[in-house]
Length: 118
Image (cartoon, rainbow, N blue to C red; front, side):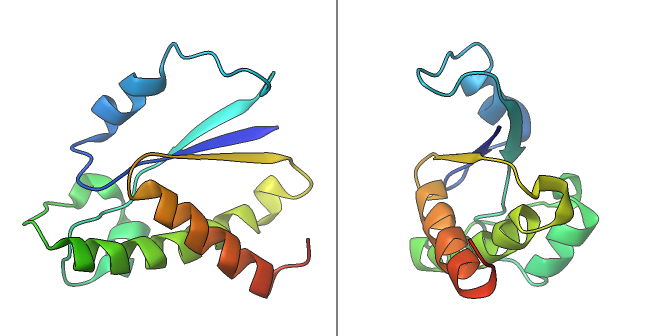
């Protein structure tokens, strides 16, 4: 089983986001591998470059909620492709979203249902 935590709007950094769930026990999840999906909610040129080169190189300049919402849709499609990869093939997956991370999950599920066989 795999559990993926998805960051929300303006999550400051990977350490603060991961700290929120570090010692948290989830009822009903059982034994699971845990991953943290941090996506840039800020609007910057080259959002795909951020995902391919790594979140550490990202220096946000701020954006409107509408721009962040659009980025969440893109991030969900990318997450869908990650879940559809061979790495997670056959795994049961739990998705846990914080704030706008729930929109990322929704976009992920919609993209996954259109592009992969369940």
